[in-house]
Length: 65
Image 1 (cartoon, helix red, strand yellow):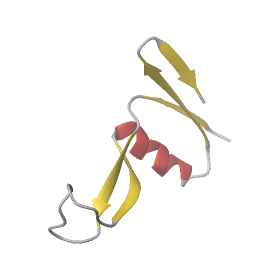
Image 2: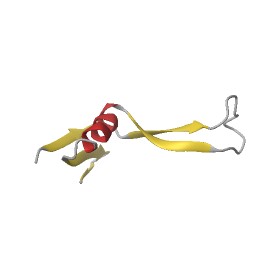
Image 3: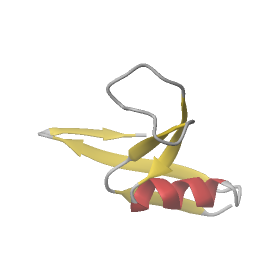
Image 4: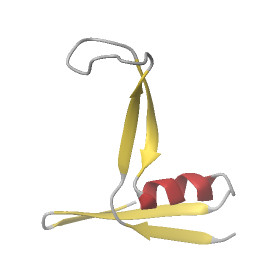
């Protein structure tokens, strides 16, 4: 089995269900959807059934999964 490790930002996006929906008012949203190159890459690689990992750096703290 292949192993893939990515390094970079992991972002997510949420989308409004209605066109013209205001973001400063309550409303329905869908998501989260992967965003940012590393998150999109991991999402696509996961569909290929490989072992995945991610490293992130927050300030001086390093976290690995």
